[in-house]
Length: 239
Image 1 (cartoon, rainbow, N blue to C red):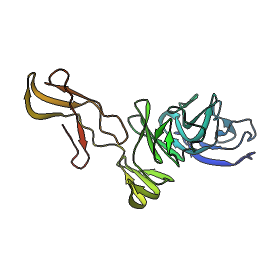
Image 2 (image 1 turned 30 degrees about the vertical axis):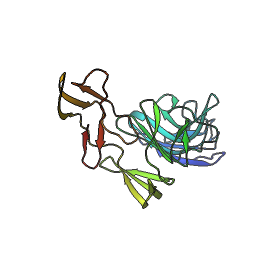
Image 3 (image 1 turned 90 degrees about the horizontal axis):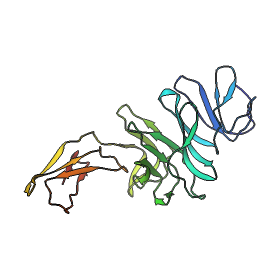
Image 4 (image 1 turned 60 degrees about the horizontal axis):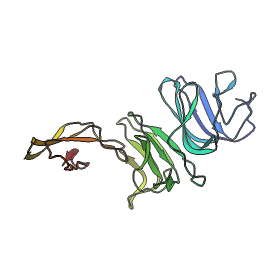
């Protein structure tokens, strides 16, 4: 219902089932700014609105929303925006003017945000169409052809669609992307004894593709370096 003065480019619902639309419009019986919510009777603005047209809308708990696209905030350009139920904030660090818009964005249970679109760079970081915002930075995930859509599976994995190639290996038009590995924080012994006792490395965070793996080590000589590698094939850490 309603007559918009511009094109709708994305549609979704909030956590209580109210319809939300985004696009190139500023009027639908009331003044709005590129995004509006229908309360069952009338359209209403959603805060101050967005500085660009959204391409996808993800429903989050508590009335929150995650919108992908290309948005300007105080003359800086971003590829995702977050609605916390009362106001908007931009996701990540700003990008260059010529970086294309994100086609979709989704938030992981740990708060990381994954975005996809025809992007080769985000905030100076080389990426190839798929990136993760984690630990206050953008991280490349895998080299893929443009991913045009996704569905969240019951397992938590993402089913992605598009003419996909992962790290130059053809994957077909549908492929499953596993954003995170099974949670584990088990200590990893090296089977070596150092001056401080058994040499052990412990993962402090879960391994995430395109994320930051934090570790700590004990039993090592001061000034030495311990390297911890997560083996996805075996689902374990090795040092």
